Length: 216
Image (tube, rainbow, N blue to C red):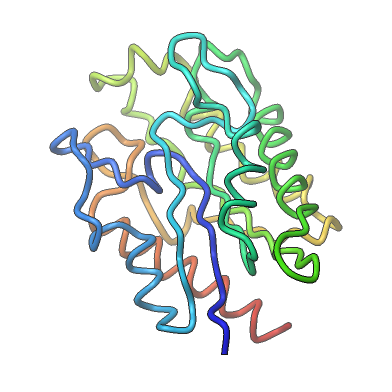
């Protein structure tokens, strides 16, 4: 039986940034690796995380961080695909982008619809798409070294994001789940997952994917 392929498209929390050390978590500690273990040998889980990635914004300070132009070649390179999991929005809250929480949701939905429309591989297989609202940024982020670069109101916008995503994705055929009540950011910079957060995120996404497979 052919293995199912899941691409996880995200930012530093998919890449595996460790706020305590400033380095990357070892591969086995990242949520994508935990997810692969939960799903077993019939699945291939591909981590497509990039620190600083936004949904659709080009960052004036750093090159190549917009998810929009990269999404299509990324997904086609891994085709055929069964699932695409998108977890973005944290970086979009940066003050320099000037986006409202609703605008951020619009960008993520644009990406999700693009992923849903991709027919990849033999027979034009269209993947299932699951959008995850990331855990909201903690209010105390502003008092950490990252606060100055992020700017103001990031925690408020990230908290509002889930509600907008839920409404905008309703009726699109794109799956949606809010991780807020299951997973929390760390207490170092309040915007990254710690090792426990990676384990919890893997469990959460595993439950979302397998529940929808069972229903399908």
